[in-house]
Image 1 (tube, rainbow, N blue to C red):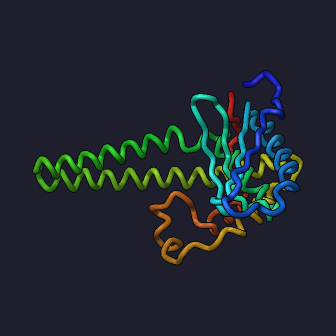
Image 2 (cartoon, one colour; image 1 turned 180 degrees about the vertical axis):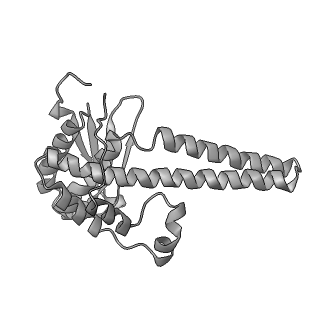
Image 3 (cartoon, rainbow, N blue to C red; image 1 turned 60 degrees about the vertical axis):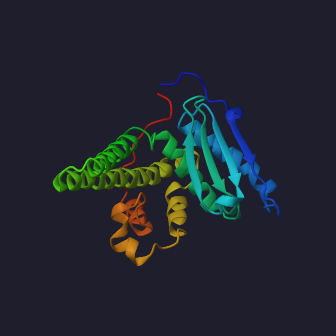
Amino acid sequence: MRTTPFDPTAVQLSYAPPAAEAVSGLPDTMPGLAELTSALACAVQAPAVLVTIDPDLLDGALAYGSDCDGVSRVVLGAELLADEMRLRGVLAHEIAHHALRHGQGAVRWWDGAANAALAAALVAIVAGLPLAAILGAAAAAIALRLISGRVQRLEEYDADTYSVRLLEAAGLDGHAIVTATLAAIPQESRWYRVLGWIAGSHPTPDARRRAIASGRWAPAVGIRS
């Protein structure tokens, strides 16, 4: 466990301005965003968090890190600044991904295995191996990719439920914020809701809302241990 206190000055915010226009409300939003980021980072004992506002991302968001500097990075679409509830929920969700170390071990392993199986199928085709060998390698690649998608969907459920805990640690109504954030996600196509989600990396919004309503267990971990 970390023994040194969290340094609020480690929270950094940056903004990539659009080419032709400014984002209204940005100066008023940044202080509150910095304060919330500091509180959430403290809750997961993150040594540093860099939040970037990107107009090109619209109302989307993503989380990524670097093995070199250990800084947790979150990119938020500028349209989120117009909705404080969604801004809080999305920021907590992305920091939860960092805290739970998502997109690393398991997902990388399954994706790597799927790529290896696909390469084996291509080699089998070029080498003129029997059809059974080609189909076997191709089937393995598909199965491994489906498993990777399943792992990523579970990570989304975990990030949702863990973000409730993080927001509550920051003194906010985490359940209400996350529920409202998920309610604002546009409905997927009928194809995705019925079958497409099996190959997707994200559960349907309805499935995520049901998981929150059910009180799904959220793991308790931090970025640094």
